[in-house]
Image: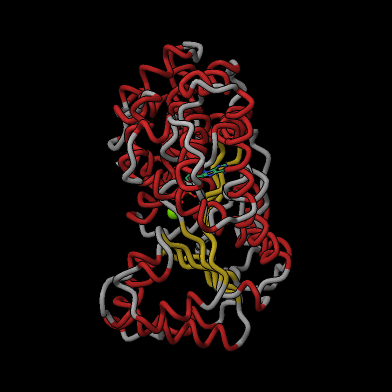
Amino acid sequence: MEDYSPTDLVKIWQQLLFDVKKQTTESYYTAFLQETQLLSLSSDLAEISVKNAFIKTQIVARFDKILKSAFEKQNFFISEIIYNANNKKHAPKKSISVSQLAQTKSTFSPIKSPPTKTNLNSRYSFDNFVNGFNTKEAFAACQAIAAKPGRQNLNPFFIYSGVGLGKTHLIQATGNAIIANFPNLQVLYITAEDFYHEFIEAIRSGSDFNDRFRKCDCLIVDDIQSFTGKDRSQDAFFNTFNALYQNNKQIILSSDRPPGSIKTLTDRLKSRFSAGFTIDIQMPDMETRAAIIRSKTEESNISFSDELVNYIAQNCHTNIRELEGILNNLCTTYELCGTEPTVELARSLIQGTRIATSNNQLSPKQVIDKIAHIFQISASDILSTSRTKHIAEIRQLVMYIMYVDLGLSYPKIGHEFGKDHTTVLHSVRKIKKSLATNDAHIKEQVELINRRLYA
Ligand code: ADP
Ligand code: MG
């Protein structure tokens, strides 16, 4: 490890910002990066001072990756950047700060063994994850793993969902919590894609590929679906998996679909993964989306009216990443131009970024028609008073979707069906309860509707 003088740090940072400046707009650069400083640099961590918590959130969301690759271009392979608002020194165990360097220059001796790279991003925690009914079980399981990694009934742990619904957040939060609870345990997070690249690189350079992975106490592999066909990295992964599993080490996996549906996965891996604990995350309902918005806007100190929160919750219902994008845009517009966030502005942003596709404005009638089509019955069946179990259930599902996805009130939905609002309330509650109690049949039907309604 090198020992950097304050002047070195300033030079490194200037060079790096020069590079980053070319990759962003003048206004973003001025608003977010201009007043930053490189406080310390170690073989694994960089600590950067930023003006306030808002700027920190923005830099993390917009520039974290760009900064890391800019560091890489200068041959600093940083696994984590710590953004320090308020200039309070974070004092990471393994990095040397500017002031420490200034004081201890003559006696400083470099750390002998390099810090273990976890690849975890400290921005993901259980605390900043809003736990709705869609994540209840996944969240509880992750917490249980963090309290006691390697427990048999949750190993391997397999989580799946559509994009942007919180898998990476939850599994990284689990890794961070394990380290907080058991500082001596080795946790390693890697995407399946990076696993593949490291494997290829190890073959190329003749280095020991297994060593790094097999000494983990918890191995987290994200986006398992990107393992390609019959490549040898899957064999390597299979062997790593077995070695860890036999030693009761925790294995956490994520994917965009259940293990059995990943076509490129070899059968032996599919069966290994399926043997553990598998859980999915659904899109959060309106209330959870609103809670997520409130939690995320709290940090920014910018006031969002209830009407605005509800509007965004209603209209951003594809995934949380898109929802965050809208919030970031609203906050940036406020920071840069002083424009207060309003429903009007949110609407134009949503339309502008094409997050609100025409599907987002589905009318109640379109929902009825589409769901009727999905289940191959007629719209009039849904609107009828038929009490056959199948039709009654689909009717309840339609009411639930109108409530959760369109954000319609009970009386408004009742009006569509010519029914009393208490009937609607009862139907919505029934579906919610089935989902909360993990009713496999209802879950499947809701998933089917979600997949096809907006396809
Ligand atoms: P995935 O890995 O499923 O594609 P991510 O974990 O990357 O999704 O989530 C996308 C973004 O949304 C992340 O910034 C994450 O922090 C945020 N996010 C997702 N779900 C929640 C939640 N329930 N509470 C707070 N933030 C969330
Ligand atoms: Mg992810």
